[in-house]
Picture 1: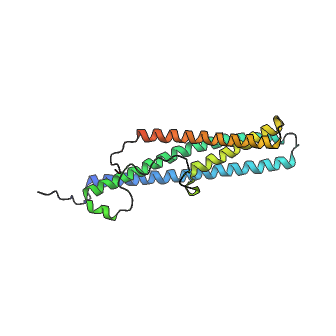
Picture 2: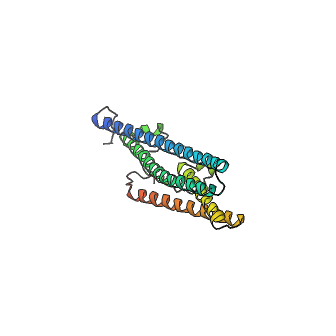
Picture 3: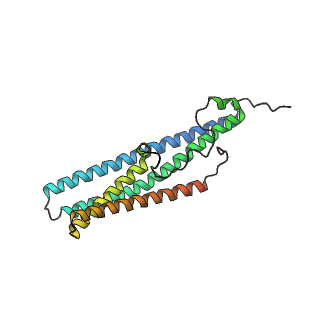
Length: 213
């Protein structure tokens, strides 16, 4: 006797799965909106700091300009670190929500295999992958919210380092720029390592029931 596919019905089980799918979709949308809002707020803060530095440079005593500029840069930098950490968690949550929706699609295709021919989205729950911040092999088109904030944070840190080296230690411009570039690289690398650690941890605690291979 051959197994016959179970017909799709509006029973309580299917209704529950559809409601769960909608919940995951709403959670994903909420995280997406929140991430964009955080980035916009951060960009607005950075822009305000740049304008503030410009005004201080024009109106204040030259002797205090580096210190006021440095204080603004440090303040915005710490806001950036908090923004980066929250966006990393947002990215992980969105990946998990998409995997959950994939799993629910799998539920329906298991009940009625013919549905699989009409789906363009995956029915396996090991995609999308928890990706690193590396752009190698993906290009600039892969720059996301996390990378954007990390780059801005690194620029702020490098700029602050240049001010310290140039004004406080009175180094030549060449050495100040070199020091700023070094700090830029170190800060970006630190954020990349943090991102990689959080992604690796999320990957370990996520149970895959329907792998792609």
